[in-house]
Image 1 (cartoon, one colour):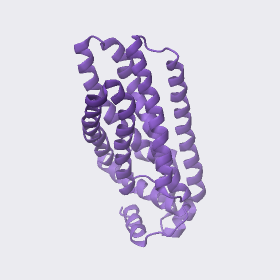
Image 2 (spheres, rainbow, N blue to C red):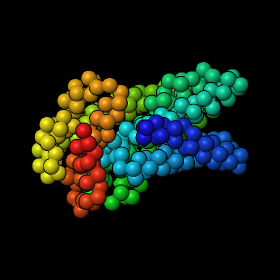
Image 3 (cartoon, helix red, strand yellow):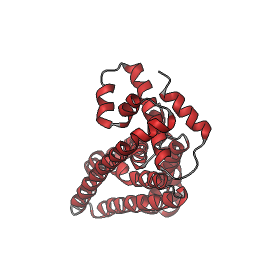
Length: 269
């Protein structure tokens, strides 16, 4: 359900605020100013609030979790934003250009921008560092990427030709992001393998359960044989185990109430 809420937040809350603010800026300074000077800052900031909601709900334990929730929120945002842009483009005769920039590339663009905010927040958690400093760095990178994308769209609107040089740059960014996500998953899997036994011993969890939840491929193999209700419970227990593992690997004092709740969730069945 949390992922559905994240998608809906991006689709309706973040989009609604962005439309209002960008519309106001556009009315005062012109459409191009709204696209370049307002949209990247407002839209990425609103998506950040959704990511922080997931963090406060303890759904983000590392960079990969940050990427997941950032991407879900961004996809929700892009879905509704594209409907708005297609409606406008259909009426002013620019549907073909809008389809290339919005229908083909934009569904990937928004997650590629926003994922870096999630990455930096997750990095702060893993390193035990101050969240705000890392979030600011991630948000700044997301805004810069978004601003570059929007500036390209404005230049295309002025010239009437989409700048083809941007396509290989976008493909390169996409390829690097996919590689980085793959590397994050491998790094998390490697780190989890190192601490699975320690987590089991420290919190009184059976090694059988720890191995099931701690090893990604094992978890996938077990999960595919479960029914819908069992999968929901399994996902909750695996998330709880990942949270415990994150707490074990991260410097700082553990909150006993949270630890007790997580262990209870894992041992509930």
